[in-house]
Length: 231
Image (cartoon, rainbow, N blue to C red; front, top):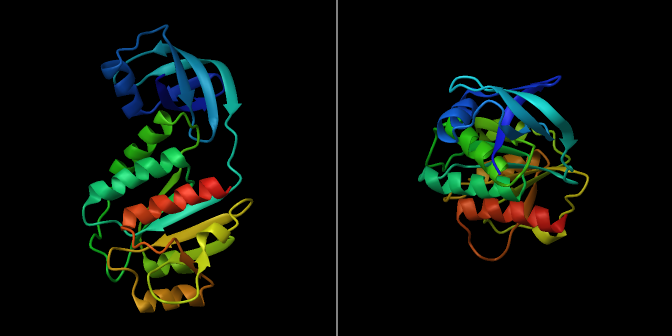
């Protein structure tokens, strides 16, 4: 099943420029073909193509909106991008397929990468959403400093996963349902002690995700999977 992302107004669905190119050039859809649509806000539609070109495709909505069931939790993962960007891109694809609401990137003291191509990340997210038959597009935020992330959080609960010896909440005991949760995952060299102290001063709780030492992208995916299973 091919699903396209579109802006829907009344009974008219306008595909994004990239989706239009894919529809016309790659899949070679024609006027009169039926297609499946999402608006990124949780709604599914069925439409029939009225205008087809590689720059703009427009469909007449035949049915919808049909609202996708919302998860019982809101998960925001803030993660330090890895030096090898393909590792974090792989994690993002899988995290979206499992279920995540928001992703941010953190510039930390020990970060190995300080540049992120948000347009490329957005494409990966959109592809994963369609592949997994979802209608909600997660929010993707550009790279921010550790302090900006920590001091601007509005989540119901804030958690930071680090490797230092301290009292920690086991992820198995975290209640995700009916809450918004922000989880911070650091770089391969971990957060600095100063960063951990800043987080604690801003009401972040230390999080344990097991006794094994995990790579950054593995830790991020572990959190997504745990939230899904525990909810």
